[in-house]
Image 1 (cartoon, rainbow, N blue to C red):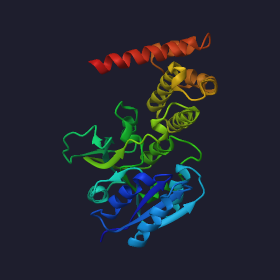
Image 2: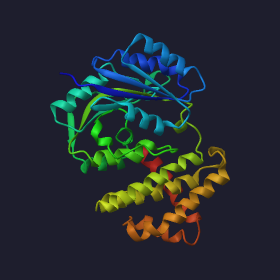
Image 3: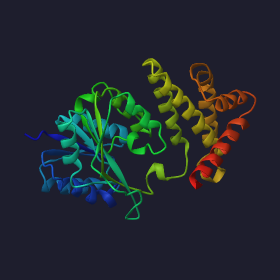
Image 4: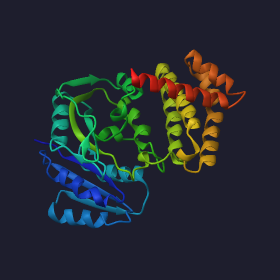
Length: 330
């Protein structure tokens, strides 16, 4: 018997895309789903769209709340979920017709805790990363999949969308309040709690680039939330005795802070305040980076030189940008 699966959709001012999103769920080949629409204080007509679709399909649950952010919207969805499994879809994206069915089959047939599908990125109506798919499944445990979160093409390993989770994995865990990078703050912990994870080579989640998304806008002070995540991730790995992953996290921290300092003034909103806060983050964490992490030699030298001047941090960022451009040309 097919088990109930809870689909959680956080919604904030998604009116232009919401019909497409909901319709893709209504038309899923796997029918035993509850569709939990969390309207997070939308100022447009998103709530009306939700209510309209609820009249047409009794699998839809609409929860309306004041604006609390996507983390709290997802947390509410998990709280309301009655299924044994949880899957996410953002209100401006859409699902392949077999999104739920394929992930469920993969999970059940292989005794998984998490089933992962690929994300198809769509910009201006056109896919930008579509390639051949094989339907092959790669298997990982909760430790070795952590390496995937450090790879260059890591995006779909770092988000909760495009994945089917056993609900029990969320026990004791919540998305962090009032923070972007909420996916990255939780996903590595969900992986760690998993005994077996399967990644299927098929595009099941359709990610639409949206100019209103915070990740598509100019750099701003809220993007620095990512450094809270890196601090937590570093401490998590150290506590678990996963020093190699802790070292990679510290290395990534320094690379990202150096890249922030290379941004031109016209590329950052509230430039002075954002750069000031970035420097405060780094000064607070610099000692731990040096004492508790094993960095590549060149990077360690630049961290030491940063005690003399922040110009060395910026210089590292400029060298990193140059190296990435060269790698892209090869």
